[in-house]
Length: 410
Image 1 (spheres, rainbow, N blue to C red):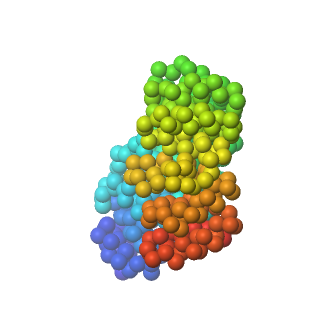
Image 2 (cartoon, helix red, strand yellow):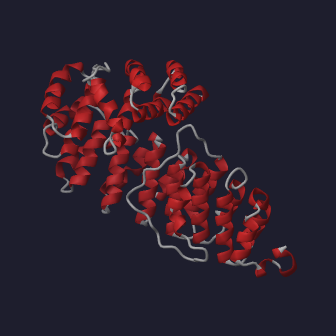
Image 3 (cartoon, rainbow, N blue to C red):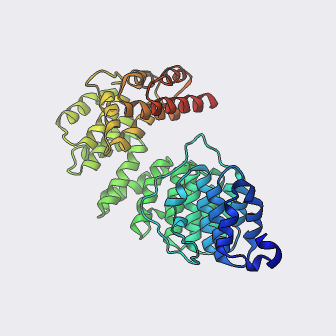
């Protein structure tokens, strides 16, 4: 065909697009073209392989990740993520590629909150390929993009490579590696990246401070307290207190008490969560008084979270737990309420209290609570999820089936 009479050198991007119209059956021919000398052709080959998608696109994308050209490495990495997170390639860094572009300007931003569901396990070869790009990619953009991909795929086997990358001299590589470690949640990485707490770049410093809490690095408590007390950057102080709230200790009680009435609502919220994780029922009167006097939704959510942890597990009309569930309907606060409920639902009493709103709540509540139980449910959660699978709303029913399947698989 195109490669026959004239050889690969005669192939043009439009020829590649023509080949790609063959769908899955075209994958072997496209894979051959990954060795074409033209970068424009190889870019189009990767694009066509991504468009064709599963189930046969992984091996050629892994091959493309070894191309040696930064543009191809970035496009291949985005394609590997897209395999497990459909639609990502349109939003990823490689998504900026035009049909014949040979360079790309990095589009990294401070927004990086995507990750596949915990029950999805990428092939080890995929994680290994991305870790290799992270370590030896053709450019720092390609390395940073690989780090981002590893975080989205929760590539635990790549933790050593990500820790090594945190020692890079490139800010984007460092930042993306630390955020990836936040998502993977391997606690062993915490002490090995804590030196970045004092990084001169604010976004790297804040990401590291946040990671100390998420990775449960208690060794960092002293440094976090020092930052909280001495930093002139409000973002750093908020991050430090948020991490201290994830590392509950009676030695931090005075800090939580002092900042529960701070003028900054995010500081009040973090202090409230710190109180809750101390799990001292004797704190209930203090928290109830603070909730009564609080007018902002964010700290009200955190105070409600703390009260539930301290034993207010009922799901009555005006209870703290119901307040959090109701905020699943809020476009602004759903992203806050959901992770709070994921943490709370690990407690059997809270989990059982959630079965009522799971079955009788509003549509958004049902869908979100099914997602909560997919992450924090137990055997007792399967029956109510199967009951929810009979919901007349297809979106609710589908999410219930998915959650039940995840739990049964665990």
